[in-house]
Length: 227
Image 1: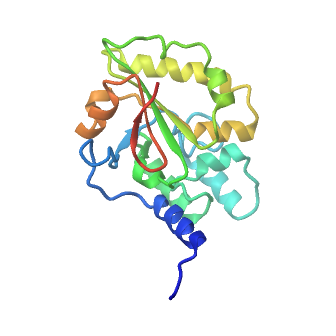
Image 2 (image 1 turned 135 degrees about the horizontal axis):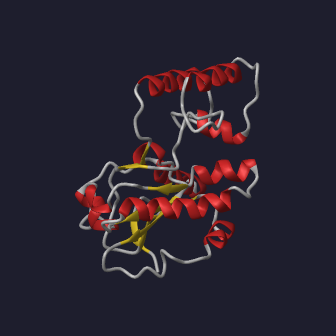
């Protein structure tokens, strides 16, 4: 009789966890999170020369990097990697050119970003929720103690939603300003500030996130309440 190695079983299970779950989604199906896309103030992609605008100068700088005439820092590489494939190449140059010609708000797409190795924590402030967690002054400790494979999202469901999120981003920007280039590149891609009102998103996302102060998606793609 042929026997299946226990190691092979473990490897197969771990491999299966990486694939994005195609559904069904929702609370009646093991709380599996479906796909969603969020506008993200921290995704100012393409601005490789840090002049607060994306234009032809960024295209020229990226072309020079791809051709080997210039070497980008980790932070510049994070800015130039518009298709999130971990490298900067001709595909990113094309995407950057399209961005210059047709500017649009940068968005973070869950299904595209999914790799089965990271977790995602959402902090939401609402009209009736406590502000204690949102107003906590230990943001630097959060980053210092956090595992590298965790993303943090900040949303508001109040009438002041844009100001709430912009102020929160400002708090973290002060902390990031004191980090190394490598740390800055990491947290720019793992901190997400959503300027749209929480309940303006898809129904399944709203049900999971907007009425709860903190909730997460684990690496098995399941919603988990935090705290």
